[in-house]
Image (tube, rainbow, N blue to C red):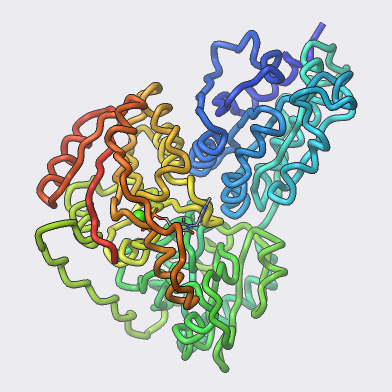
Length: 526
Ligand code: TZD
Ligand code: CA
């Protein structure tokens, strides 16, 4: 007989979901029993860390990641991380164990009451199959749902007595199914867009995370070069979709309505690709766009297209659309945009290091294809001004702004990309939300490097308190945390740095080693 257990593992194997990220409980044991030797299980010690690692892994591979959580409690712990995965279009198949069917109704301990409703609205699809025989179909559907545009997390809750039941006849058809979407721009829309771009007097390009996610950075560069367009990264950027040292690159757009329209003023056409319009943060009322500016967005997400407060949008395959546009537009005769100013070198004063200096040192010693995972919130603008990022997949940031992403995602990304080195640049506040991922890095020998920017405070909140005129706010400082001791406690080598020279030496040592390392550096508040 083919059990539900075997039918599901056959599907997961054939669909390439053989790496599990999880934290187990009683409800999950029957699913995890007889764990096949061609699968691997990456244990995380808290569900926020589990989903953060899986999120990084799935984003870096571009394939659905697989997560197994414990019932309602495990799912609850993972919700903050799910918010980030939802906003970053990360394909994640999140499964959770459920009590036996006979004891859900009496709400036995660890029953997941109203399980399908629990993760909403942060999943594309959520279900608890109505019978054991439906579990393989639900899993198969979940995988295809997660991966189809716009990608995102999905959730399946499975009662633990289902796994040993007999699978329904025909479950083998599910094993190698393929589901595709055809998202090429129709010829008519394409011609209209090409004409708009060719005829624009002063067009500008704004690229978002889905350009990088779809391996289309190179086409964004060709398009910008042919049309001599200045290029901005869309605000609150979770990825880097354009080489930061390119002369067309103007940096990261600020996250306020008025600031954005001010910066884009004077451009008769703004093409936004692979981003929401826009992911604002601070409330800064004003005109969405200056008069005379027309905005056109290409997105993979119908929600992004429909909720934008201005401009036209088309839902299409980002890579295909950018590639075709870059081939079809004419080479213009305008002069290239002026490159943004190179910032002054950071002064080297004694005492805590200026954050600017940390980025200069990283530029100096990190490999050219290093991957940065940023969660040093108050220094994000400095990072975008200074850090050199030129390759595809070089930058990740929490897409919903939920802290706890970076430390965990750095581990997942490093696991997915052993040929590149991953550097988490993480604030001393943020580092606490998924600190348990250090243990996973140590145990599985995943050589991510964690640079902890220790300024003793929630710096970004101090800045925001200024924006909101909120005075005398409690709870904004985080003194007295020894990250070296925390790291050693979880089995990761750690070193404290007081100067630029010490940081440079510590980084060089970390790059030479193939083990994870934590570097705690005293930095000044900005
Ligand atoms: N909790 C969660 C899960 N996500 C959040 N975004 C916050 C709280 C609020 N928050 C921010 O938005 S930034 C920030 C907090 C607490 C400060 C982070 O401090 P840090 O970095 O030390 O990591 P900086 O550079 O000192 O700001
Ligand atoms: Ca801090």
